[in-house]
Image (cartoon, rainbow, N blue to C red; front, side, top):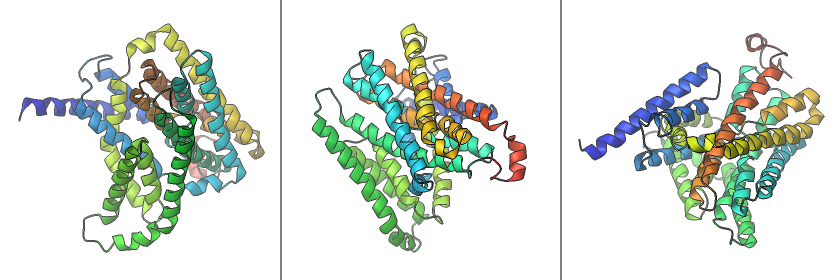
Length: 399
């Protein structure tokens, strides 16, 4: 085998093994596995050991990984959850987006950053990680409680509005972009979402029975992959991030309660292979210099504080009709930025107007909120009933 083939394969091998070891270690520590994979990439990359260098093969696998990460997020997203608890979920989701967006944007503008960077900082603080919070709620049997359903419903709206904000950011490649372009992007992406949600309810139920009669192997899964690649390519072709199309693809094929579990299982299997390359490549590109510079450390601390306080107060106050304790739990549950925050930070590398340091700053903020949010949520949930007792009592024991 040629040397030019062996080296990329060997790098992929080291990176994948490191990511899985990091995932295992953080799972055992009861911390988000995605952080373990990012840390693993940093350890084996130029930042520490230098065993693996960024390359085109790693970049390609990372691109496939982030597409599947957002596809899986879409598959696990049910738009119906946004309206399950009426105005409370909608209020929590809406104010949980507007408040950090405005505070982050205003903070960056106040310290003298350019307009593009200010929009990026605001966008970075928007989305909540459904996966991280859902796992904590599941550990305490709280997924089916009122506050648990409100958190999940609001997080769905957060992700949708966060991706909308990301599409507006990527469409603004420079400071000369006109506000008319922004308005057109908002309208276009909104229509994209509306059309997909409409087809999800009308066209897909008619297509689904015919898939079973096809002779290709795994017809439903094959159709889902066609939709995934088609939506991603379409999204990229019209100037949006490909991940917006992949999220919508997952949303589209998640309509059937009978089909969705099987698709989620297959997506999880593929994601377990490709997503670690994306997360580990994030750590691979982290700059130790940025993480140790006093100015950048202060920025990380400030953005992390804004990220926590903005979600805690905006979402908590919006959830007050549920009662004080439930409102506190909702506020804490909305803090982790997790995978979507990491994806937004990754997009900063594609926009020349954003200083390179903000990549590492954004990743650090996403990691810190993903550690602090679950820790605070566990501390508030634990006095009510420990996980072992809760599992014995059933899912309705926490409220």
